Image (tube, rainbow, N blue to C red):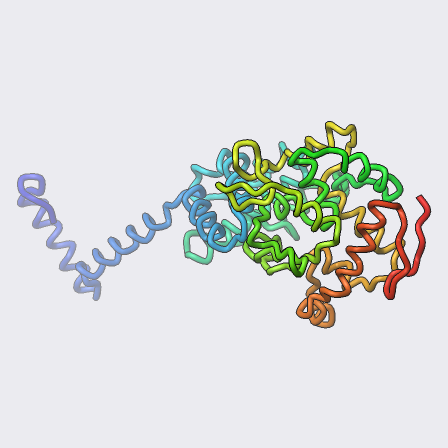
Length: 355
């Protein structure tokens, strides 16, 4: 009932009468008190902020993601857009109006970012619901919810693809690039000849390179799809590697002046300094256009050259074999086109290109 003198004798007698009356009604005061305490503890357990759940979600995804870049990107979205609007709110109290307020300022100006933020917030709230921290519908759900208040992303923002170089301009560009011997220029040239991504090129190590069999094996940990990828090296790519100096302090193929990995802006700077408004990634699109429009190689061969893995069962069978020999023919034809503007006639490539 409480200590004396806080609880006087008369108060104690009154409380005793009330308890006896509850017992006569079949209510156990002790059990009632325990239930009340349990309910209070349960409510306190639900008093978790969106930031706390968001950090738990980020920690979980960090163990699932294949690259540090993905983890940092998720953290940046949460810190820049979600936490300022929702971070201090109890996750159980977040409503549709909070989501609308968060997204409206960026929905039409940063549409692609806004759609990703919405998806992340939806998953964080799903996680909170699964852990019993909130109940009811997810206020960040798009279909039948936010789509009634926000314009469709596809109607207000067109997809921006990486700027690619027209295939007719590539041979002349490669001649100009070949005259440059900076590490960035050599890395860019190697990337074009292998149709690889920037991160794969900049992170390449000598222990991944087999100059005897002329194969570059990129481990799954460095690949976007998480699968080991073998790249057949054409003669020009092999010759480029043969001429590179070895750094005793680093196993990296392309080493910055500070002895570290090249930054993600190094290849972009080479292109900018040469006066070209294209991206390194855009050369992959140039390669794909050339392969599709000016060669007769099967689509599976071309897609595997770009490390694209299709989920279709038939094409997945091609992925298992890797088609390394056919891809080697493809890359040799690509090399010759980069150098001469011509595609030589082979078993799989029969068209001629005039540039």
